[in-house]
Image 1 (cartoon, rainbow, N blue to C red):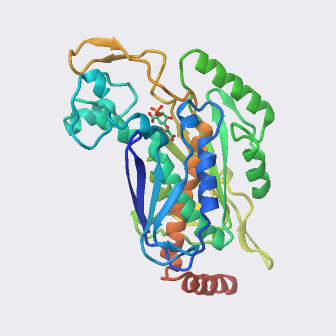
Image 2: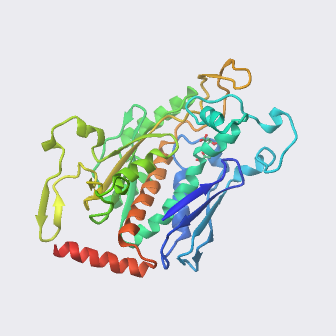
Length: 387
Ligand code: EPS
């Protein structure tokens, strides 16, 4: 199971080809589009989100509501494209730098300068159009397809914002359905209402200051069987693969599994989860500080992953940088930006992590049709139960 994406932030569309899905999986375009809608929301988003109304169009691999086993092709159109048809045209265009909206002043914290040096570009737009977080739209669409597979096997995915800037939410250990519902009702995707008010105030203040703010988001996946991933080879460890996927999200700088970095602060007896057994539940753990992983394999406890997003680097407040033409210092030019995209990033992370889990699920129970996968899954569950 794999996918590749293509497309620029202000180009005509984002495109993905998703390969390796089994046949006969029911796909609800409504559910896929619901994920895209969720990603567009969140307090602190900028003007671009008022222009876009993201919808995924499936243009291959699905027929009459079910996958056929063929590659799935996905397209999300950029509404903003109509304002950029000349600037982003495939054909050469005439005009001054201004008319071409050539960018020659790199923003600190963005891909602009490194990309321009590496790809030998004199127009930073050739870098920023692709490094833009607009690409997360199509990644969410791919993750939403993976969720269709997880749903088939009763695996549920939730996400919540844990921190925005200096404001930390109190974590509530809620049943997953309630967590999903409560975070959906919050404009910053938190359960803790005091934190919600403080986060909104902080975003308003940050925006008024011409600044941006980052945060920490958490994803929880419940209903995952024991034994996805493997301890036998470094690149088969599922926690490691999830970490790569999380840090690959635009502006993400780190990933924690379970208690994560806190595991380095205390003794082993306070870190590891004791193994228990009952007739009803079989093997299970007394706690889940490991976040659902031991030895790169799922334990059967919920997967708990956290990611940290840095503040968006496109600032109204100037930072020092150097013009690539004149080599002179300047204070970065003002660009349209989102003051805070942490709530949206929570949705992105849910879908990105869901993709990795679905991929590992298919590696374990792989088959060409959903029926074959179900047989493999049920045989395995019986084996674990009888162990
Ligand atoms: C982004 C800059 C903004 C964001 C964009 C990511 O876009 P623009 O430059 O058009 O104002 O709105 O995010 C999206 C378009 C999106 O769909 O999330 C950036 O520089 O990364």
